[in-house]
Image (cartoon, rainbow, N blue to C red; front, side, top):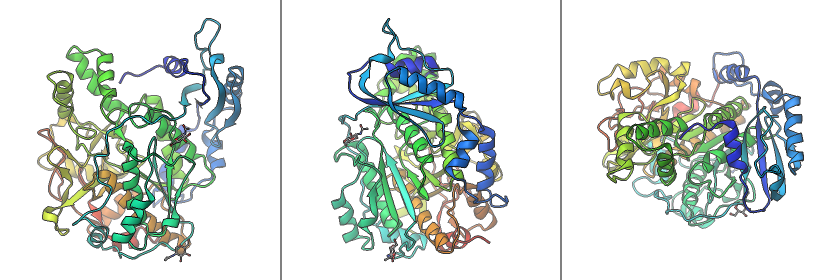
Length: 551
Ligand SMILES: *[C@@H]1O[C@H](CO)[C@@H](O)[C@H](O)[C@H]1NC(C)=O
Ligand SMILES: *[C@@H]1O[C@H](CO)[C@@H](O)[C@H](O)[C@H]1NC(C)=O
């Protein structure tokens, strides 16, 4: 995917469509990026005197919010263009207006879009949602033998009937488009596997409840099933922000994720845990793939067009968009939210699986994919906890190995292209890279963010392991709240400290398998931390001791 300049991005989004109502958000130039970064890490680092001293929205708005002059200029632009109901975000980083009568006024007399003020970094347009025709979900949303809810809890030593008792404990899951769940399916899970699920505590975040049969609906069901079964009696908030007709596929997804995260980051009340199972290759990964196709004689447009037709493969637009998502994730961490993201289902090289072999661009992209570590976003962000997948050899829970599916899909892992390696990872990653069986050194950036951080059962994909882990963190946070402690916020620095200081107490190492899928090379699951299953799977007692209490 080519980097789009601010101007051409605005052109793209302001092209005339039918005259129905829509919203436009102008994302403004913010300040204080360095202060936010140092605050984020200080609040997440147990040895810091600022540890877990989470901030309020107003404090963050003062730190990062846009200058008044920019807010004024952007407001004037929106009003001049016919925008109504202007709302400045609580973090003062964006301003949104409603356009009730289409947007012809955004066009100049000559029919060209007016350019936005200089301090507007990019715009996000929110249309009414039209359901597209998508393939059925590929993952099954129910837990089947031997991977029943109680078997998984037993494998982690988690009491099967443990319920949250604090009324405040909450965990959120999000998806755009048809993302939602069926109450009947959840009731079925309660009847057959998890009688203590409290259906009254599963609530929608807004009026969008998804659409059965849609691609993301199956995703939502899996998230809700796992969250409500692993965080019994905690509030499970299901958020669907269907901002445009293309939010399930293609770059509309990136815009929807950005819109959701920035809005959530500015809310008065935020959940304790956020579980994100959706994602796709990062914008940088897609750039790398298209560069390879261009070298083979394809045009950027050939590549973009091809990738846009592949289901949930390249869904992020630009570096600006990625930067804004990073900022929102940092704000969420400083506000005390523990954000988890699924590590992806295509091992080290794909979003889900290899492209179809077509004697053409599909083969070129497969070759480039196998020659490189192709990271997935947002899981490769250093500001989320990345969750890989495990399964059990011969169905025996005593023998955990990396999750893989028919040799074509498997637990995602590898190294980011663009994010530096955070301090807390450096020692364990260096140890790991000394081991045998690593992919060729020129196929990945050994100095960048390595993922995943840990793993849980992912036989329905890492979209299962992520909400299982998120549910377990919500239960730990319930314990903390009951003891008068705050939530955990961004938990990775603490998790790395616990896992290295007390090996075998909070995580059971997973050894066996790798992230090669259809390619020759992948990252092996080895002794200790690895770029396939992280530190391994949870051990409940160790979590309760090392994350549930502060000493
Ligand atoms: C989202 O989808 C629901 C139907 O599933 C629809 O009622 C709602 O208007 C949509 N929201 C937006 C912002 O398009
Ligand atoms: C469920 O949570 C509520 C608080 O919201 C608490 O009063 C109740 O005791 C809990 N129920 C169980 C079975 O733990």
